[in-house]
Image 1: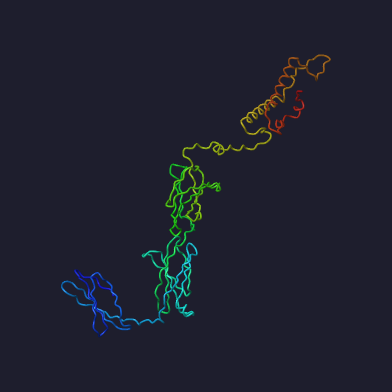
Image 2: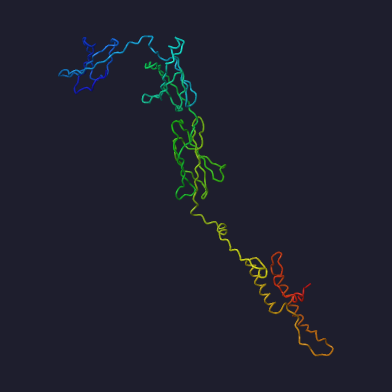
Length: 399
């Protein structure tokens, strides 16, 4: 029976009980007592229970309650207590609980309505119980925490009646390698330092066991097989990574490890490093960006060489030479003198002096040297000059 809150300056309580219509029995209680068990009562009987407080001035008015005792359970009706509780470890997160039902062992027969309840919890008075109800005398308990001590107990039920809980059995689950990867991996560049990044991640949950270390791996996005790894203590959840290449893209992954081994990698995180603010622009790349304009296509009459500084000079020289030749009616000829009316002399022939002949040869040689000195491209000819057919036939050639 539970008592009421003790009044001020109370010296204790006076508990009375007795069968209805019979003499009451009284039991004094201290002021600190809140419960009291009354034994040796008659089964299936109505009892009257009273409670009153006491202090220096006397006793308070009693409070009465009526209670009915239950029928006494015979040995035949006793459900018994499960025996030989055995907890067998199946994995780091599961165990198999088995027991013996003493009543069934005696009768050697199975009662269809007989049920069993298994309760378990982490070791500790404040931990919450979990329950499993089955009809067999063994059950697989799963979803446990690795490397954790658990308490197990079993009781028998039949119909609306429940037996007593068995003695508790304790079993520790073994530790295993992590089965999950750290979550929420984040990577971002450090301001003003294009070679460094800050990395952060969530700690692995306790269900994965005690983490010994975290292993961070990173590699250039275009060279994923050249990865580097850095190791950090198990209580670390952020780090600074330096020595990266500015302007490069990197892949980052992380995994956890404990005494049993390594866990899986997290999803890859890609970060693009900023270009170095102090680096000079790439000259070769700049020249490639400034591509020269494509020259306009022209006919073979006007174009002899490709468009280049040297080619432009050659082209201009050829055009000047062509214009001079066309203006003079072709290449320099032998100078013609007015016909002399001399007897015996053919009127169709002309004569020149040695001095004029020498001057003619010098001019012709100079013209040919100019033509040969021009850097003509392969498979190009001088036919683009388009000299008159008659003039070409009279063009002298040096041997």
